[in-house]
Amino acid sequence: MKVYNFSAGPSALPVPVLEKAQKEMLNYGSAGMSVMEMSHRSKAFLEIIQAAESGIRELMNIPSNYKVLFLQGGASAQFSMIPMNLYKKRKADFVNTGQWSKKAIEEAGRYGTVNVVASSADKTFNYIPELDASKFDKDADFFHFTMNNTIYGTRFTTLPESGSVPLVTDMSSSILSETYDVSKFGLIYAGAQKNIGPAGLVIVIIREDLVGNTLEGTPVMFDYKIHVENESMYNTPPTFGIYMAGLVFDWLKAEYGGISGIQKYNEEKAALLYDYLDESKMFSGTVEKKDRSLMNVPFVTGNEDIDKKFIDEAKKAGFVNLAGHRSVGGMRASIYNAMPMEGVKALVDFMKAFEKNN
Image 1 (cartoon, rainbow, N blue to C red):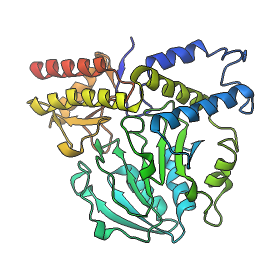
Image 2 (cartoon, rainbow, N blue to C red; image 1 turned 60 degrees about the vertical axis):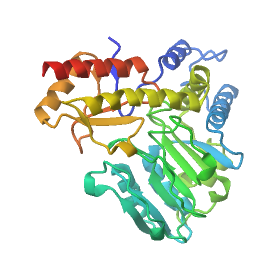
Image 3 (tube, helix red, strand yellow; image 1 turned 135 degrees about the vertical axis):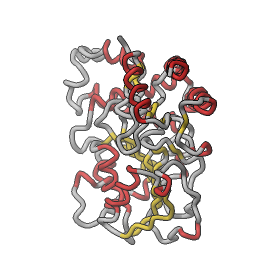
Image 4 (tube, one colour; image 1 turned 135 degrees about the horizontal axis):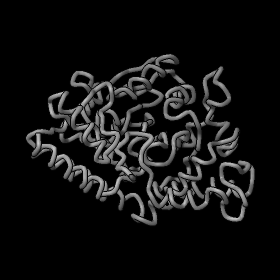
């Protein structure tokens, strides 16, 4: 039975992408071998990585003075790479909106001074805090925030106004889901395993002037300049992940005409689920309405036993990975780009039936 997979990551992939990968699994094009077997220096793979870069550049309208890197180590490695590469005065501003921003703050603090300008920890990160520009450090090397908070289901709907200080964002769970102006950022990074492809790949989009300023003692593998100069091929890149990312980029263009098309679809999917949560007598959303994520929807019944019963019965009915993160409990439906509207409709129908019967 093919289930509806609401996992926060690794998450569902588009069925047409999986089918194309299946078809090419044993023989990619005229290569006579799988992508997983071919040399990353081969003509066939060079065409794959170049097409993937071209695909994301077109989708996100990435300006020519930005480099696109296909790296490894996930978003977590970027928590270290960013201060190692962007620190000059060794100080940065951060907004604390959950577990991933906390980890980024801790790691940046190992290399310099961190100024936490705002936090939503007081309410278990169920909202995006208001930002007071008077608390920003005009001499900071960068201003870091997490665009969409996977665990808590919040998102930034407006960008921080950081002036000449480069904006840096973890876009792991919202990249390609809605339109962003890349030119507003100094650096964007995103683990692939939510909206781009299988785990093991991280994409970095970095403005050229931020490359080449590494701290003394930075490992070669953590130097953006090395990866820029070698076009993401300093070492063997995650070849299959890059191939799959390219297929996802092609699917987004073919199926939705690009990011604006999938954004509209995502807004409709999210509205369907949030509208039900707002009218339900049993289930309720946990996030302040103005900050609700389009990608991750946490909800609770207010009774842990009923939550557990719901998760168990949902799994038997083919709705899997609905348990909330261990740090917050309850339920969470991650409805990334690959989750079809019919999956959300089916979940809402199941929730209605469960509410009626309980």
